[in-house]
Length: 413
Ligand code: HEM
Image 1 (cartoon, helix red, strand yellow):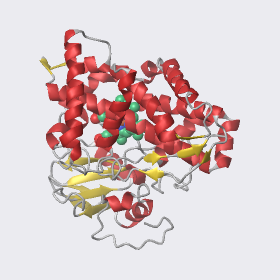
Image 2: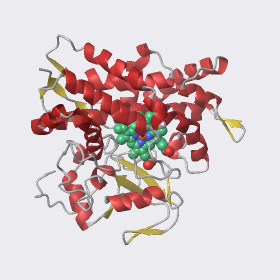
Image 3: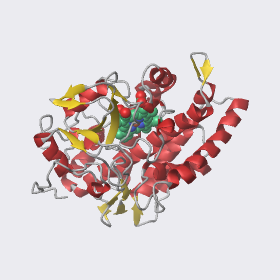
């Protein structure tokens, strides 16, 4: 897909979620055309998953805001929270995570965690997160090249979320691999056997490993987030085992992949634009703005989905009850009615954006944690390696959902 504005693929009949559009990251040129020519666009299906339904693509920032805020019309529960209702994770398992529930149950489970994720509570973890980051960067001493995805981002984010969940450091890699496979399912490297392997092999493994953690905490409560799920009472009832496992899975998946993705894409943008990078090196107080600009330009999840609970209208388009709606953040975050020169990575922009969702009930729980991790990771990496260069062309995970690099090989000095 061209990014030069020359692409003339007919929009009618286009299937936006097909993997072919995501070889090199999100199809920005298609999204640009959709915003201007057909902002609420119908795809008749997903070619890789013929049993899945068609969906509406929502591409402008205003429309993403409207869908996000109106949970009564746009449910996260009845049709799954991504473009796929059953193809990778069956609907029943999606509905066991609070991201796949509607109020009131959603609100009650989310509330169990909210106090621990406020900016003030998260700020208390700064020293610990910096120590984890420094430890990981220390392991690069003596090396000339590395892969920022696997050698830096992955071990840092895995240890941070692992410490919140009460996991042993020795298990970080196993958990990270499980999360990467499940979130990247469909990518030929993540699941060479085909996406079905996730339900056959990986989800049972998550249940087995998590079952052990749950049993241990039933016996001896701990002060980690896994224990919060094990001992939670919602309306006087404990969560069922599969709800605990999937609650654990949600926090692990969200904590692992998203921050890693944003750090790597942000670092790539800095390395590829030495002028912008120099501005940050000269004035490190710009790092929080770099974080927001990275979130805007490279939202870690390309979409989340809703299903209409009744017939409704969006941007003049009728949407029928039961039809699926995908909110495409890589598009809404480059909406030219909100951003000047939206495809330009500008370290001074400090933008508002929709990478964490657009408000409403499902707004990301982990914003403060993600922002802190990203700030520390970027600060420490730039301080140590101010002039790293790209060694090989980076590769994207081929996925309409996980917007992330799978390799970012760099020369450190
Ligand atoms: C760069 C990092 C991150 C990005 C871009 C991101 C993005 C998002 C988005 C877009 C949503 C909204 C889903 C929807 O509307 O259906 C969301 C929800 C969520 N995020 Fe994040 N996230 C990030 C980091 C984290 C971290 C570190 C955690 C930590 C545990 C986390 C936990 C969650 C949870 C639990 C939800 C579900 C909230 C709900 O359903 O009410 N996220 N995230």
